[in-house]
Amino acid sequence: EASTAPTAADVLHSVFGFDSFRGEQQAIVDQVIAGGDAVVLMPTGGGKSLCYQVPSLVRDGTGIVVSPLIALMQDQVDALLAVGVRAAFLNSTQDAVERDRVEQAYLAGQLDLLYVAPERLSSEATKRFLANGKIALFAIDEAHCVSQWGHDFRPDYLALGELAERWPDVPRIALTATATDATHREITERLHLQNAAHFVASFDRPNIQYRIVPKNEPRKQLVDFISKEGAGEAGIVYALSRNTVEKTAAHLQANGIHALPYHAGLDASVRQKTQARFLREDGIVIVATIAFGMGIDKPDVRFVAHIDLPKSVEGYYQETGRAGRDGEPSIAWLAYGLQDVVQQRRMIDESPGDLAHRRRMSAHLDAMLALCETVECRRTNLLSYFGQPSEPCGNCDTCLDPPQVWDGTIPAQKLLST
Ligand code: ADP
Ligand code: MG
Ligand code: ZN
Image (cartoon, rainbow, N blue to C red; front, side, top):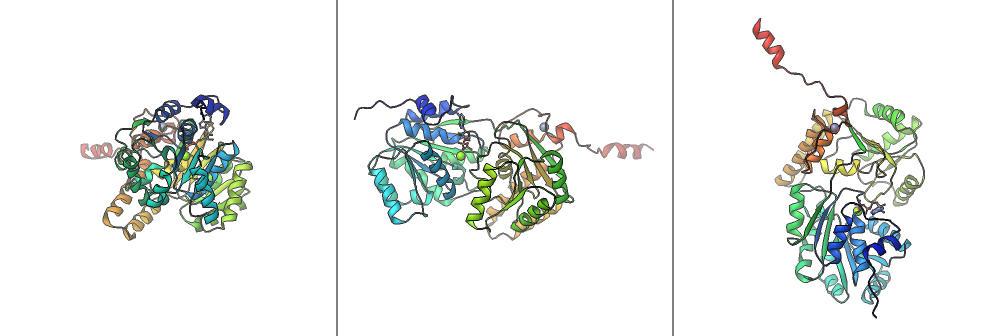
């Protein structure tokens, strides 16, 4: 029937309830609605989802969204259903009856958005099925998963390049919060996005203060830090092992801090409850492995603390990026010790991957060490890793309290001149 399509602004207001687009959202949305491809590099919390959700509602047909995490799909679909968007997903958690219901809805043109796991979309059966319906666009979320260099590589993403040949007239938008030049190039090449428009947002998070302290008694240091600067506030503490997570959570509790552990070894129901409490209640500190946080959208997280060295700058940036999404001052605190370096080097040496894989892990670690050991602005170091030049920020630990650089040449000269 002849209904006029809503405009992007209509959808933004009436469906999502927002006044205006943020940053580059408008330009991205316009590009995709017009049928063009886009590569979007935008930090976590920047608002990537709207960049494909709005065009899916404006364009004819269903927006097909590739998303790597089943738990995230469920959350996104629930959020969309809550505002009246006709959304569904296809993944391995469904039984045949549910799957069939979703497939019929798609074929009948009753879905605005359909989330699909990457392994499904790379299968020929799924592609044949999709070809029987009308596709508004393909959105490839967490597109850095296509990068073998990255910390999140998923082989199924490699097959997504074929969508370009199969559906040359359907616009494709790839989105990620990981934005090194190398990853950017890999996304463009491997997803066949040579004709795409590129949108690179600033990765600076000016309200986050970066601090890296020497690690000696991490649990005590952490209690001191939280008591002094994060008392009663929501925060996340990251540790590398489940054991450290449990011990640290117990230690914080013993010191009167409302801490809860979170790691993949806990029951799904316990994890869900912990996550829900963190979102709804005030002042909870989650102590977690990196299993926690993808897709968590809590605006008022006041600090993110690392008591173990992250394995990559990308990981560190993503984890610390969960602080201060509301734009209010927040702290990224990391305790850094040589013991961690030794341990991670050993893990790399003993890791089962091939030599190239070990080299990559080693390069990731080196970049992380460079950030920890810099005597210059932490923010500048971090942004330059993402290919974005910047002036010293005046707000990180090294800007506020420049480390004494011991210049060995002066005593040496004195010695020689006597
Ligand atoms: P990303 O995927 O880039 O990490 P999301 O798409 O999850 O970010 O968006 C982060 C948060 O910002 C969400 O709560 C979202 O509703 C909000 N948001 C995004 N765009 C806008 C906008 N134009 N106006 C107001 N809030 C927005
Ligand atoms: Mg996202
Ligand atoms: Zn600085």
